[in-house]
Amino acid sequence: MNIHEYQGKEILSSFGVRIQRGIVAQDPKEAVEAAKKLTEQTGTGWHVIKAQVHAGGRGKGGGVKLAKNLQEVEEISGQIIGMNLVTPQTSAEGKKVHQVLIAEDVYYPGDNEPEEYYMSVLLNRATGRNMIMYSTEGGMDIETVAEKTPHLIFNEEIDPSTGLLPFQARRIAFNLGLSGTAFKEMTKFVMSLYEAFTKSDSTLFEINPVLKTSDDKIMAVDAKVTLDDNALFRHKDYAEMRDEREESPVEVEARAVGLNYVDLDGNVGCMVNGAGLAMATMDLIKQAGGEPANFLDVGGTADAKRVEEAFRLILKDEKVKAILVNIFGGIVRCDRVAQGIVDAYKNMGNIHVPIIVRLQGTNADIAKELIDNSGLDVYSAVEFQEAADKVQEVLA
Ligand code: GDP
Ligand code: MN
Image 1 (spheres, helix red, strand yellow):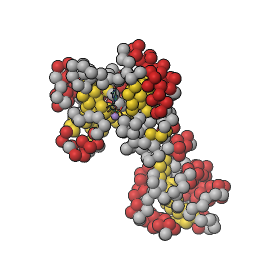
Image 2 (spheres, rainbow, N blue to C red; image 1 turned 135 degrees about the horizontal axis):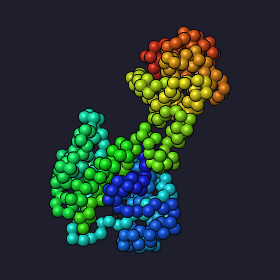
Image 3 (cartoon, rainbow, N blue to C red; image 1 turned 90 degrees about the vertical axis):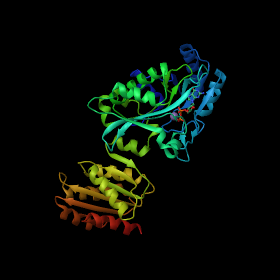
Image 4 (cartoon, protein in one colour; image 1 turned 90 degrees about the horizontal axis):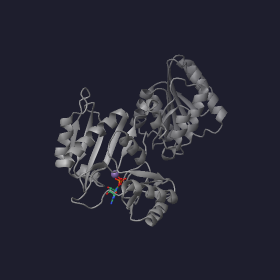
């Protein structure tokens, strides 16, 4: 689950990670109140107004702006709230901004120039260990750094049996070229950041930039945090951070009825029981020259009601030109699923695309007969390949 920058910062701060402080606001009036309150807390009169959407590259799209007084806070908030923010990470239509974070300006002048670093924490799937990726070249162009000068990005892998060790944090601070106060600050920052990562059951932290202020403080100016959905049951307070306005409407609906659905770009809708079979089905569709429109795992109970809910979700996607149903009848009997499909089809009355059904397992032969004799625009297949080929045939 993705969360907003301000929520990510709340989590970081709760583990002692220093952050650029801020208050979230829903309209320009709240923004001004937030700025006043922040000034009392921090003593700074300048603020940054930051669009809160689930997409990066906001700075490039005009979603992060500096305000030098309360009038500018009001004006800029008014411009950003309600806008469709287009960034390199959104679609061409952009994302609607519902709220802004009013944050203290931390790029104030002083003895040294502020410096921007990059830091992320994530699982290295090749080694099965968490790693901290970091670079001196933080800021808005980290993608270019990764592409053109990858040797400027460092890795620190963490042994799960010991966790992050202090010498590793010191190595990171050293490689970032720090000394004195900033060095100590960075080791503290890295240790607390990693603790936050593991204790919050996150799958990704991306802090870009990590800032060294002109007076040598180290803090998180941005926070992209992805939480592990499967661990939300033990973090009720994080689960409440979900912002459904940021998610695909179909996926939200699927979650409400307990279906596992992921929206994709192709034209072949899939209804499958079991995540492994669903992935194999998508591979097979691709191999036969098609493109899956979704991932959908209906789970163990593929009865008429569930089949109907699944059809309804799949058909919300106007790109869908055919549906492939691939069910293995182990616990559920195939004839019951077949009857469910026929009932759902008749009951809905608005299915306008051909359906290819492959049922294997208990009572598969009875199921095939049921489908073949239904008189509907539904085709049966026995073999996996046969089903995928049939899909291509009806699309041609
Ligand atoms: P992103 O573009 O979505 O990654 O949003 P960020 O939170 O990283 O902000 C974008 C850029 O805004 C940063 O790289 C900074 O250069 C700038 N920025 C963020 N906070 C401040 C601030 O307090 N003062 C100033 N002057 N610039 C800031
Ligand atoms: Mn950023």
